Image (tube, rainbow, N blue to C red; front, side, top):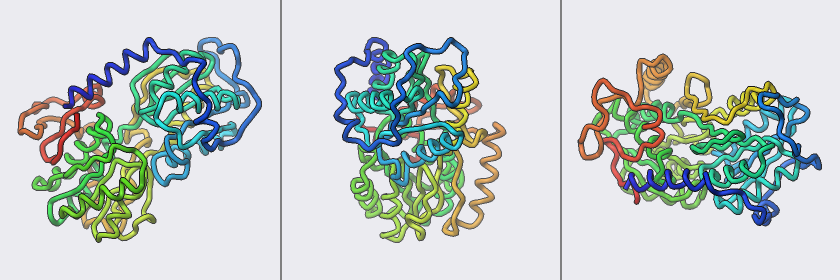
Length: 387
């Protein structure tokens, strides 16, 4: 099943190499979506010389969001980064609630280019092909795509090693559970989500080897009703902690309603479910966006892959609340220091899969590429990866 996922990803990479952003893309989606500030300034018709910086007053940065800019989760975390760019004195714009189809994303990108944006970021995996298509058509515009793998001369990819923070959150959950059963509400069966589930499980079992992590899939990144229903369904099986790879706080709210505990995601959200919230692996997107735009200004920007971790502050674990178990803070602090120093790696062997087979031998550590493309579950995960 995992091989099929990887095959689809590789096929997508091949398709991007031969597909262009055609002029027939509809503007309907972008016109119906809410946009941020607008400008009549058009993007420059000529690309700057290689290595040349662009003055800050000649830059306008656009963002394409898969959900609302104030969704209390994934896109809001990115929007905090956009606001940090504005604080640099740089104009920005955004299009929100964009469907993950090529037509919708390309339309949103064109909307931003028409507004004068010459640096554009798209924040969801499903936007990868459309972003690459438009990067080929608009070489004068610099593009960034979040969580994908396709790059070009004018397109980088960026993400955080959130699996490191998920491992830390697993320590908290593993120390908190009383029944040794933890639920995990997961969006899509792609490597990004799979490696997060695995890292969380390894963190759980580093402090509680008897605990298991039970996965339920929603097949959506953003749908509060579906997310909440999935959380309630898995809570009904008897788990007493719920973690998530979803864009909203709905699973946390479900946990509070049922009297169990929750680990959030994306950004700090203790107020959403104050009686349930333990902590959350979070992104500090301001650190990436301000640094990347500064590279545009300095002339050091390149179309490369950026995957930073705890050491840069791009990812972190949110402050533990009073709901967290005694001793959890000390355990998290120790593990965090060890991850940053290199003494501890969440995916160092020996690691076994669900069948008990050794996949990562003792004395070895998975490479970044192997982690990025992970398509199997570690021992301790209960659930399947859909084909």
